[in-house]
Length: 436
Image (cartoon, rainbow, N blue to C red; front, side):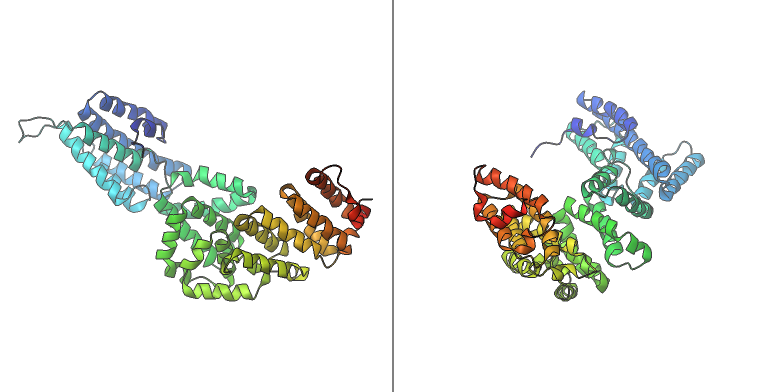
């Protein structure tokens, strides 16, 4: 494990003013002026806390930050020479925001006491100023960096609604998952502690899976995607939290929203075993009643091979994957594609899609599967290409289609790459005929 670097940590201080002031702290420490380092550090921390409240007030219109600043300003006016407002500032930040917790506040109060001893002579101790040792000063500098200085202003408890409104708005703009995730990370998540992220996760879980209002319905997908992004950032912590609070999280889940838990578990199957038993039962009932939803529930099969076998059986009859209006067939099939590729590999997916393509029951079925065949060409192997050519040649629902030529030309090009430009297609006359 690498030692904590004060210099490197100081480069991540959020506020430029604080970063400049902190240079004096480091300079004093590095030159052995430990008393000066402690006194200056205390002043820098107080300034930075004020800056953070100002940012929350101005940038986020946060009423909590505004209230804190108003009270502090009034205390300063009432007692211009006093310093009681400093303790009050920390107390209010701990109680009314998520910026500091109790343990971090204790570190601050320790620093304040150390600062008082370093700045004022003790009357009962030969009127000497305290000179703290190097190790003590370094510990306080590190504690204050981690607890306060390197944290940007965080969301207060009152600003959650603004956060929800923002992600709903941005989700409509950044449809691509990667863009949406990057925005959330850069704007919010990289500034939050894991504990705060867990709090957001619980609130989003409630909105996505408990709430039935029209507004919740309208923004449910954005909330779900944000939920998944948060889980992915700290999977072990989130899983432990779900396990510890399973009863509270599952107790209010609405039956009609259970399908979204299936969706979550399709991405992170380790969640399923730690859910409340009643919700697991409800999930099983919903999955068995809906083939398209079952495409997401691979975690309910004993093995991935058994899941693939089920997809083969269901996919052979297109209407089973195409008739349900609640979950679109294209969405269900894309879920199966993602799951098989992630859990069993590209080769398993190519085998599966060739199998289904070869058993197309009509032109529409073949057309529906064609984009998946084309997508599979890039990772297809020699033996699989032979199987594909045989499947096309033996099924008139594939080779006799009016639009077959376009995709079959792409297949021939890939076949020549895999099998050689001199490969003789005479054993596949129906395929050759479809190219004309």
